Length: 482
Image (tube, rainbow, N blue to C red):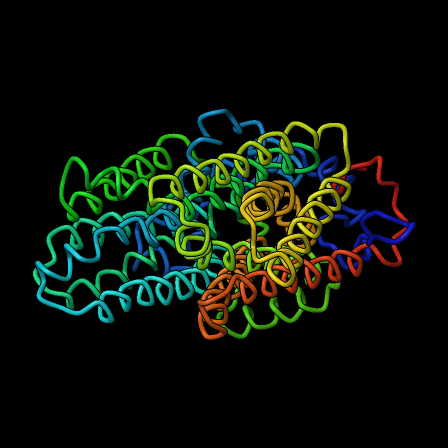
């Protein structure tokens, strides 16, 4: 599917604020300057944004002042030196809370509806409410963090998710639950976007691709296994305890950010301005063909994956005659396959260019989707085709999501928050429309699901080819490396 010149074109260095030639020589004559003026730099920074520090005190971080007088390259090296295993664990947890909270309590719908005296349709609205909150949170968090830094907005988002989760556990009515789910989604959206943005600030080259694969693998598996985890909790407790678990995860993340995550965006790299600046940054990113292409590679791969998630239970249980427990085992195996491929991809990116890994993933998913389509059209959907096709549709996504997200992020470093928000929105939008489209097409055949999966992977492959067309870089060298 990819052209012969299979590599990553870079944006014009002249347009990249990271590559200004004057920065390398600037610090030499001014190296002694910060000594007498270091005390003056503090009020200069805080004075330029008095309304922010006054309204939201938590955004004030001593690390800002500690690094503010250093040259840009030294600021970045100081921040990147702080990437540890525990930092990776915290960032990965942040990427998983939102997806887990999306539908962990779906198995408890009958119990919740009975206790709160509501209908199944109104319970479905709680999922929609969470998606609306997540989308809103991503739109706000990305540009806000590009302006104020990452740490303050991240803490606010986690606290909001924590308090909303506690509120959900205590909700006396479905109306209250709906409002709290919106707030929980906003907080979860903050964590999803800013976790990626912090990673982009703190890493580059092979390390970025390795950690992004881990984060995206966990984030991609989380919404798939969330109903299974919710079912396990219900075996030992009630539906309210599901939200208690989410609250505990939020608390752990809050402590992790407080003690382990530094402010990753130096003051000198922040962007002033409001909504107009956000729109201008979005236009800039949408004008970068490589960013848009990889964003849509991930989005349409998510479309194919969610077509499987939304219809696989019907196909396996109703058409093939498997029990619910047997379906759960199959579902878990596929999810673990995706996790395993994400971890494998994280290791392989040290020696193999991420584009090659994405290509392998797309080829395998294409073969699996087409085999499912053929089985649906001509062979009455036999299990010996369906079950392997499901596995090889889900597992290779672990090679696509992390690498696609990292390649897109590499094109948006100067406003990583906005870029991360756009990545999350594209992914969420494509995933959210897959289930309704498959449902509208009918539930009496596996054909609608197979068609949706084939369309998703073909469109994803088309954008993958677009990303590589006209490239002239060496694929033996990682993006972001000199």
